[in-house]
Length: 112
Length: 122
Image 1 (cartoon, each protein chain N blue to C red):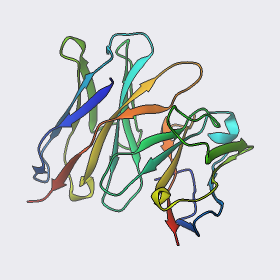
Image 2 (cartoon, rainbow over the protein chains, first blue to last red):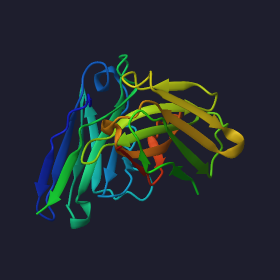
Image 3 (cartoon, each protein chain N blue to C red):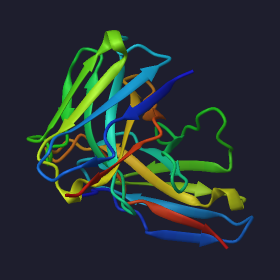
């Protein structure tokens, strides 16, 4: 169902940097639509982490950063902390009939 | 403070119709740019967008579920209602409502309810 592809999992030791890719196509990310990122802890609702490709809402640590290029986007976590262990989802928009709003497949970040 | 809260049955039988309500506070459903969207997440799986209703009563649906979904709102009650007909076990999921503001910049889905878990079983 998801049209945005993410790696199922990434891991890193505390203090390290990890990145999560979000690969789309010319009908979504490549069409110029914004990408947003959400963080989800087990049993809880997703929380907005990054909006408008690169912006952090108030309260989100600057350890989280994001970028977008072509048909892909990426989320980086620097100075990884144990509390960053969660699922992360990208989200964009798709101009095809299959759906207006599309989410990524999700990535589990594990802190070793 | 912006809050959203989902409510509805925890268990529905196959073929039945699911009706979920999202009650919002801290913003008005009639304010220009304000939208409420529904998203679901089957156990252990990814998020799936379902539907959105905007301040002007515009309605948008996931095309793969469009024939089964209806979204509506009662701004006076601060409520958005989602119905999903002909429920099937594959519709078992946690259902979330979230706020979406049509603004520049685009804030995405910036506030979420806690979710309500729906199980489809006879």
